[in-house]
Length: 205
Image (cartoon, rainbow, N blue to C red; front, side, top):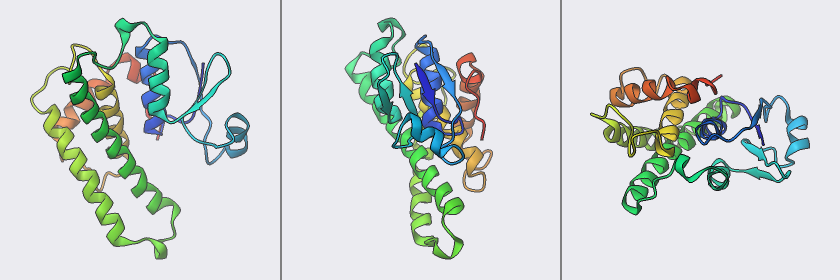
């Protein structure tokens, strides 16, 4: 399989780390949707990261859909999603919060970096900022007091996506999410980032 996209994207990175933890072989191609647009379009005309090209040549996109597919390829014992229905609901809640963190952080980054200053809408930015901080607070509450992982005795997709989202947000928006603002989330993310699977797909923003 081929994973296309830059590791400064939390969506690309969560797929890369997941593939490693699922023990599924893949090659990673650092292709930017901005700097290498034409090259990316040659792989996926929609130019959307992450893109996964399966062994059969099927082109997949959207990180959650990619992860749903690769879960079916992996040995069940390596699954990153809890089988118990109660824990699964908790898992989906945490993943949703982490993905909301990614989404709101990306919206703010794009607003600041891609939209001219005179066209930026301050009330919109403040609204998105409030959503971002609310998601971070809820995640911080979820990980507070934990010395291990969120739902299992090994990392699940909830752990992966939470840590990846917070690393991205803290690096891209240090003025909004500063060191010490979310201490439990800081400590949890540090534990996750120390894992070999995370180190194998380092954030390169």
